[in-house]
Length: 214
Image 1 (tube, rainbow, N blue to C red):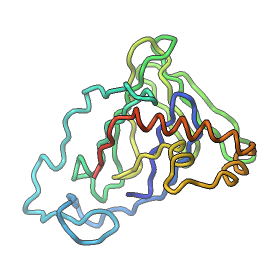
Image 2: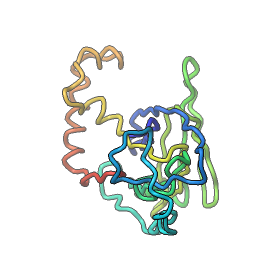
Image 3: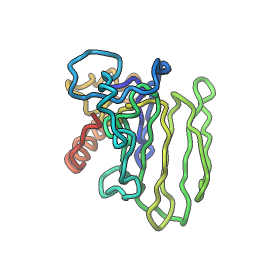
């Protein structure tokens, strides 16, 4: 998995984090990914340029809505190097994010939290045609606040960012993070984190099967 981590915040505003790094510029015109190669490189090995075709640089289906019938009420359709081999070594990718409806109309509520010690919450309501930037490495969230469906197109600074659900990582890891460590980190009694583990366990049962981006 690449160093970039794309974090999808839940509609319950679960805290999230993003691990980031920068990818180097390519040394050639293109390096179409060859997933069949056994070569171990930082990224994917290059397909023989004589075998490269136009479909290695194109992707179809970004217009198709995702299924938001899951505990998070959102769906991500990635256009990473696994779906678009021509992205290899370019350090960029895209994703379509669909959101289940909430309570208002025609808006997306987004925000991020600045770093310590200020920890300031910066939010904005977005409407059709608006653009919003999440600074690298900051906790962030998105929520549909409309009666109908909503979706956004996200540009990412990695060819193969991964997806992490932080609640699952903290409370559903294998093996589990010790209760006393979580209690200390969140400054709560150990009994408080038990319901969070139960929520994650229940959510994982109801979540649709995950598909690999590779």
